[in-house]
Image: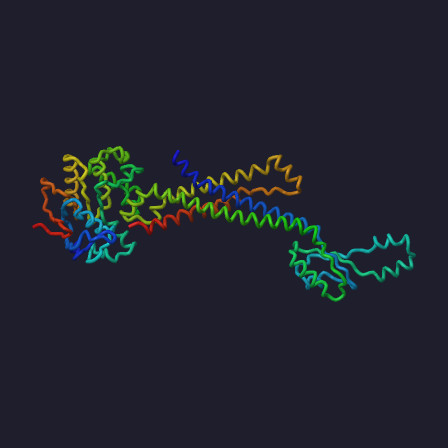
Length: 271
Length: 223
């Protein structure tokens, strides 16, 4: 029972840490998905007095991915009812060129202003319309959520490390007698601390398996899927191998750091 | 190596208190059997602790197996402890380990293969007449048996020097006699140098030995 409690005291912070990491990773992928989605829909409208080609615009900003000319046909068709064909031809000649400029990624406010300024400075460009407001609000909200999650995950990481250090200290006290005896017989550092490293590795493995199983099964629940569909999000799934290895590496890293820090302190205290 | 242990004007103490040992001059040659006696609290164990580097000297010189303990590095101290055998009054066995594994400890630390460790542990356990209890745990043994295991552990790696701190302090007369005969055979059969801290030298040892007496922090050799 005592042993289980001791293991749980390490497993719990590791679980919280891994959950925080995987959750942050999931949210990150949701934001990336959303970015891709809005960048497909988003474009800057360019009103020019002359023809423009992609290459010309790309030299102005490397964020420009594609340029399409917007045909004024629809506007002219509406005018045909009230204006004669001759005048329509004259208007057609006087009309500026319209271009829809697609970008490679969704720009931040600063980037957008920068792109607008550069495009406006180009010879023949009369007007630039960025239509940023609608997209920006949701994007900013997601970005804030992402930043907050990073901060939250970092705080969780620090707390988890402190909790683990505390538990390692208890482990060391429990194993102190054995380690002292081994010290008197000239045992090397790694040999004295081998048991603690082994315990830490076992707990890391257990925590990783728990988190992988959670993130593997939870997105498969109908309720979760329906909720995600309702708000138009794709629930990020876990790759048991790729993500599992990453999570295991993180938990092992934290567990080993905790054991090593405590053991180094003990090493300096021993005769 | 002429002297296994050599101390010159050695001064020892704890923290900032008055020194426990003020003038210790000790010379013990290879294959010697030596006793350090004195009243309780006179500092016998302190001298022994300084020999395996648990206490560093305040002043004077101390050399064990050719190593200067005063200026010893942690790596050299580990190396020294690997050629020493230490027996404690309170046995200091690892309770979570079997008797066999306890005896194997110095060999495991020395990096020997498990086969060699087991073979040597069984040989030593047979020597102290405890082979039949190899798979038991220390808490399942009597005090005398635990001390025999501790001696087997101390001898497992054929140490150059065996240091014993009151090895019979907690034992009855019969168990004490068994312990003395094992220590005697360590010197005679294995050629180990033995230094024993005790408050009473056994009368039936039947062995030539050196005797140092500690009084008021000063060590005298008893002729």
